[in-house]
Image (cartoon, rainbow, N blue to C red; front, side, top):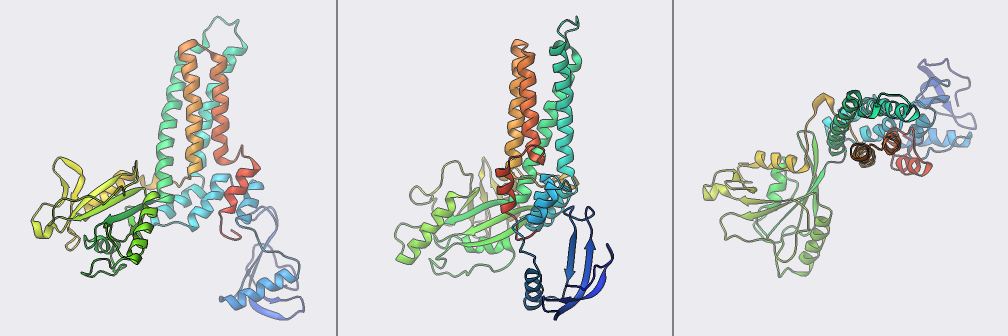
Length: 410
């Protein structure tokens, strides 16, 4: 494509040729011989002019000359397999691209830089110390010192337990940064659902009229609450005798409720108390009741005294909206860790919980029966579960699932 191999790691101006020698574009070529590249393999980057037509010509020329299109996540997967990144760092590439808030982007960058991996490795190091202590006691039973009952072992166990607690908390916050939460807004017609969506978004995302049943379908918008990505879903008004089109909107609203992390049920504070019609709300999902239009009733904004699950708000004036945002963050369990934050995925949470469970079972066996062998085995299983986070111990099936979620190429 270039006519010659450019000097390594220098930006070189060049013409890009197709298989017939025709120039399809001119731009910058960058040549990275192995192992000094992102993937650890020899890589040629071609920086051409923008636009789908020119880019298409360059890609077609490369394909005709023997290249093939990259599979989803292939570059990051190659970097992982060649030891350039661990699995957490590879996943952080996708998380950085998909970041929904500025805080999530910064946290993903810290994961890419190795902050999460370092925390996992530190905990793994503590587990190794414990294993060495316990297995030495098992291997040398003739020693008069009871290694399994000394204070040093107890201190190491406490240290590991604290490390598990801290890392689980940080990983949970990291998952919320990456995934955010989904909040569904429901209520009867003209209660103020679409107006609430517009107020939270800061712009007119939904049509608002005085005609009941204006919203016929669900509407999705994303907001940022102190770094927490929140997907808001506005739904059709819930009532017992809707028209045919409106009834379909209500059915879609009920499907959205099934996947909700939280529900905002908004009602008109000027009308008599009323809940959602029928068995609308799913089990186990937090529900915040909003009494809207307090600008007409004179009620104080914020939580209702004696009932923290009910908030007085005025969508028209914005009164009580800050309290609502705080409530949503609290429901999610979100804590802004600032510069200490990193992104995490549900598989990381699951692996951490599994590692913690093995550690705790081992501690119980040691405490209740002095079973050093069982303790050592549970520590081994704990370390194995922990190693799955960074990819030190991962199955091929797991790798296939992870990288299939990436965008094409990256």
